[in-house]
Length: 219
Image (cartoon, rainbow, N blue to C red; front, side):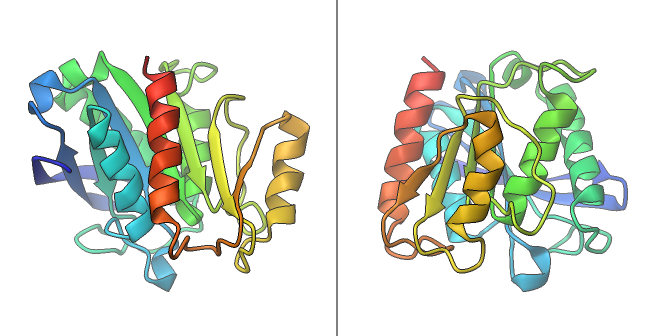
């Protein structure tokens, strides 16, 4: 559990980006770094308070990371309209730059990217724009993608040690499409038997998988 959740506003290409920041025990000064966790499709009820997003955020906080959960364009207090992932990725890169400038101590720590469904596609594009091979050249300790929207949006390549979790019975994004995306990268996919797209009844399993992954990549 976060000891507190602060609300802050950063700036994207369409205007304000409404964010929540979950703070781990010990406060920001004691945090090991930070995570950016991105939510599902804004036009289908996706917000930063989605249960999968908050489950991943809680796992990050439990591992000593501050977890930043922005709302995409047109959601909550965030300005603008849905832009099919392009404007959202640009906004999130701006959020990364501003948050790092605002919190230099966190910027010197571990950085983790995560996303669920549409948010997974945006997270992959953020990795492409800020990761080690990009002009920003930021070290990214880990990438966590859930319900990866490979059949619906452009999902960029991610590191070979990323955690990709998918439901066996996902009827929104077929498992086969995620395997087709992962196969050329030789990227393992963790499949939760019987789980659907929203991981109903499986969030305890999701949290355990994320905690174990973070324990390894942050060691």
